[in-house]
Length: 280
Image 1 (tube, one colour):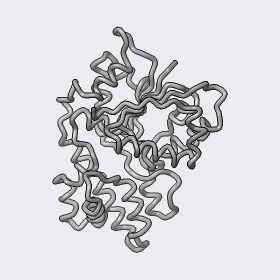
Image 2: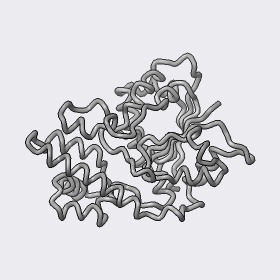
Image 3: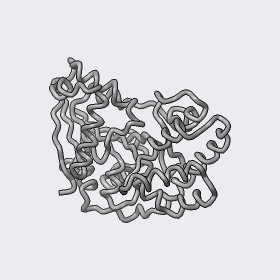
């Protein structure tokens, strides 16, 4: 039975990389934007300071900025500010050292264990929500070359190596020109995938460092509700969740609750959760 592996930013962080949005906001690349009076960057910086913690969901803050702070007369400046923000994020990520990944990390061990058994590749598909090529690097080390890579790996948000990152909002938000500009579905390189169908129809799901972000809910909401209502092709869905600490697990459970509109009991009747705390 093919397994689904879903990779989020916690994967790269486990490998020793400072890829969090909070790291970006504290970087020189981001500070240059604020010095140039990039209004969007200044708003994100204020959100980060007011949050009083070392974390921020930039994509949700982006939606908040459009909904509450942006007027129609500011559209042209917003377009420039948003474009500059994407360039700065790309520039920041390109400063990171991807040549020295922590091979003893939970992330590295997790991926190798789930794709190789006794020297043979398992039957799997990876949906990678990161911009980086850390997954590709590890897959090459276990013997998957570039021509074969697309058989095993789907890059959900573009690829840093191709200078093509997809940063923005999900399809169901807003209706203004500004919303349209930043919707992921409108961005170059965005492609539909089989993730929703795979979640509905395959029963072995492994998630590492991914919290089912609200800006990606288009992939999960309908699929999870299909599972909740009972999919005759699946006896019992197994979700193995690799999370870093109790707060990350609670965030994940809150998102599950939201995605099934609070109908968590029938969903859990169809799903067996196995929780792995990588902070221990």
